[in-house]
Length: 521
Figure 1 (cartoon, one colour):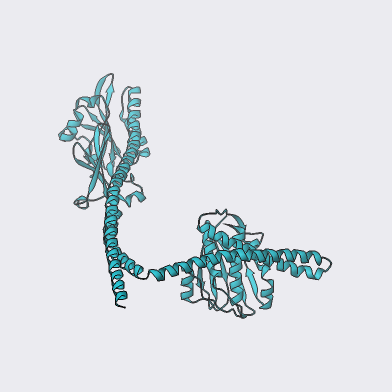
Figure 2: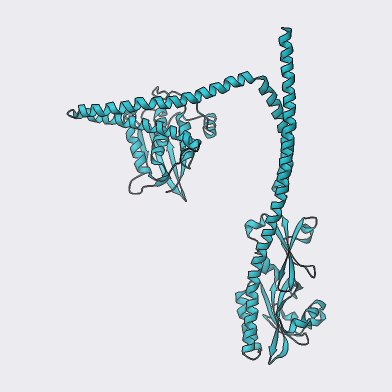
């Protein structure tokens, strides 16, 4: 006895060491993997931000290319007409105003820097007659050596009406003599406000600066909101200006937040795992016995499926033999046909249960096609003629052949494993003289089918079990019919297999409503 106790103590002691080693190994591996994931995630986030910035800049380029094209067209028409009159100037302004988003004004500036013409006048009157050379930034731009020869884009400028504007300047030349500048003014907020799609705005806010002057061109955020934020800047050249596109992540990145929680979770999990592992080692014999029982049950299910196939096949052959021998007895043909139909359905159901296991192990594919609800319901109803007559039940439906509704499913599986089980269940628990309702309606790309009975209904606990995919307890029917509790489990499995959904709602005042949703064919 003393020896046995000593061996038991040593075994428990070794199990504790194994559990401690497991704790250390799991933690080390987990932290190594999480660190690697964190590094990879940072690289991926940087690439994602850079890709977004490049994408936004391409959109800007396309937008500004259209503005440049308008400016060049205006210049070419001016050269063609040998100059620019105020009348033509106002017509050109109207064209640009109607065509371009964010258009603020079209201006003509003479060689002395005075703004001579401006259109439209509404709100722009203050600019008329102003000498723009008095603004150092504008003077520097207009008196640059190439300003009399090439079109150029300004940094962000304060508009007379307030706010920031972007200005395209291009020189006006007549008979090779420089006459001044024409500029097109766009309001920056209007031009750039829709660069991000609503979906992208959920991830990023946009900040755009002029790199050379460090002036803010556009921002989704106020200056106070930008302060203290991590702004990731990417530089791009637009004409002769360099723009810095800054991205601000809206909210903390999901992965770093998740990693912090994951570190804490893994620490706790490794403790739980170590304790569980120790208990598992202490109960190894019991675990082995449970595993053996599980393997035996799986084997039994396989053997049962195989063994049931043979008697069903023999029964079908015997019925065919009886049909041939009773050809001269018309009254025997109808019952034999009904029995044959039932055996055939049982064979198909057995085969589909076998298929279900193959689908779950990914050893078989399923092919879906259009299934007529009217035809399927009528076929399954015909299988229950006798139990319906016996309990004086009626099945009512809003389906008809003329206005048939079709779902995308597998006809055999839908009829034999979904409808048959639901109809059988409804008949079993309905009171004598009751009614079962089958209604279907189309909603967008789906079809919703409701099967309502007037039976005793299912408790909330039973409905929750069904939705979790657990078998229900076996209950006697209103006529003493027995049940296995597995029929509804098959319904849930096959509805899911066919790409549909099923839930149970309580009836009013009693009974159950089975709601099935399938894709519309």
